[in-house]
Image (cartoon, rainbow, N blue to C red; front, side):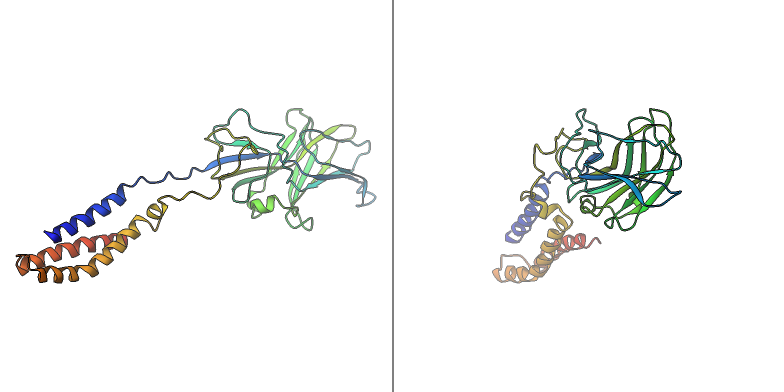
Length: 298
């Protein structure tokens, strides 16, 4: 009877571990960084028929939704350039107020532990769009990738061009938030046409375990902090080294302990014959062996 009680107790222990409520899996939420504001920008003009040197250089605070830069020429055959970097401005001028069911729109770059999904370089004009080549640098203005010429449009409804650069660099939150990233635009304006450069920057799609992302509650950046360290829970049981590992540990200890328990039971002389004790010991050993084999995936 004592042996049976031991086996029943071990079974109840394992059953209780299996019945502990599993912690809810962390929900991945999704965000869309729309046109983050840079801290600086520069524009200049080049007359390639005479020189490749810049003239009419003008430093501006940034290209963003709050203002625009006029791109105009009264002389044919010139290039207008714009360059900007340092997209760490935390001023949230754009926050999604309609609650997109998948992507929550914000205007700040992803936090350090975000997962980058897609990255686009974007240029926005208020109306007409000139032929434009976009460039980006990740080594502090030393070398650049370019998009090739993106054709212009005289339609006032097609003033935006996107360039998918996701596969062209190892994009991380640290890189996107660093001052090593620069963007340039080379524009070829048509003689006598006013173009209004509104924005030169990024659009970034990213995800992570954050409150208020797409598919979750509405969240305005800055109104609540990102979650801190996870609370203590039963993850030690339910993670990859959890319940299966415990089963393997119990099984191993049980197999080692079974012979000693049989010797003890025999010495107590509880009235069971040796054959009965052998059968009980074999059942007990197989019970723990099953746990151990399951933990090995066999």
